[in-house]
Image 1 (cartoon, helix red, strand yellow):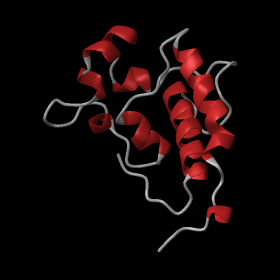
Image 2 (cartoon, helix red, strand yellow):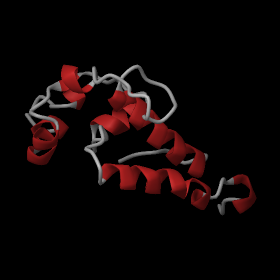
Image 3 (cartoon, one colour):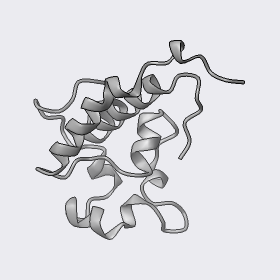
Image 4 (tube, helix red, strand yellow):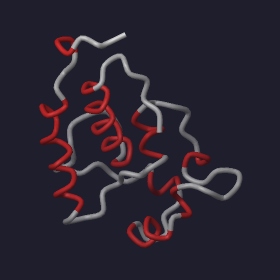
Length: 117
């Protein structure tokens, strides 16, 4: 069944948000992570297993994430204080704030689509 383009918000409308995050990411490490951010942004069950799973895999074991965030653990990442120049949105910590900011844009750009990684 074809979707009706009139019912979709054009993704280009939100490209400025993504470009803004991209540019800011060139100035500082942003608390956006492949697995954890998806869990936070889509409000899935987020526990330390979202950071490092029971096999020892996950964002928390990524060498470059550990370099950028000084070997931070799950508690440290999800306790980073929100700054005045962070995006508006949900979340009392930087990781949740950035995740919900980005995933809300993704959801608005693709209504009716199940979001999976």
